Image (cartoon, rainbow, N blue to C red; front, side, top):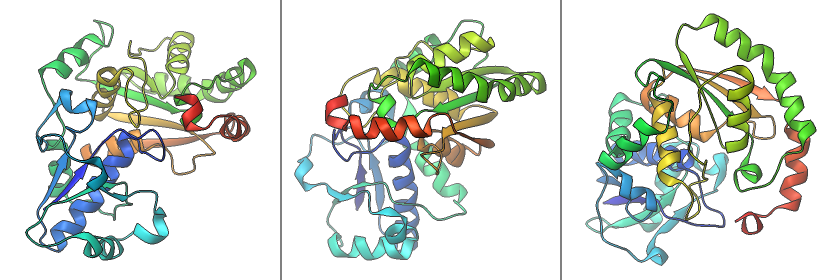
Length: 289
């Protein structure tokens, strides 16, 4: 059996969206080659809020094999991923992986269901989902605006005021159009707590009271960040605003769209690009933590 195992890893780790992408890719490869596959969140603090996954005891993290940051040229297709698996997997044994491989499209309904069923909110998380929004917010009928500023900001780097003003200018008319064309509640989520609160206040939108946390690292508002994710995954539509520096978008909102068939409309933001290039030079992940 292969068990893809999420763990905290402050350096060269992955966010939740990256891990879900890896689960999809591994499920595709394992299904094709008849290898039993499971997913384990219990080695990470988020395991306390999820059910449906492999409920294992503590394992030796040194024995978890990294299939991480190998880039799309190496792991874009399941045959390439399977070649990597063959180097480590022995039939009848358990191989634990830490994988963010690129999946193939289309994604089967079986795969989507398998991944969704491995991360079902338990009662603790359901309570947080219910309390993280304003009482008037409709959890059953809403659309989500997701703004990805970038990892340096997610880890604590501050954006200058002029960059925030540029964000208002760049995003403002689009948000007004979204509001005008929708008859549903609209909620703003972001990898920056400051940004989501500012945007919600300026444009009269809902947001959550979570303190956004990059789940690569240990600590922070894990339950609140998971609550944000499940609010988004149950959206009727996602409007994804990502900085142009991260050309692929956001794994956080991409994965929500992939595994629950949520329509996603993507927009690229120019205002963050130069700022993030400077911040990446100034902030290493270790410094930001």
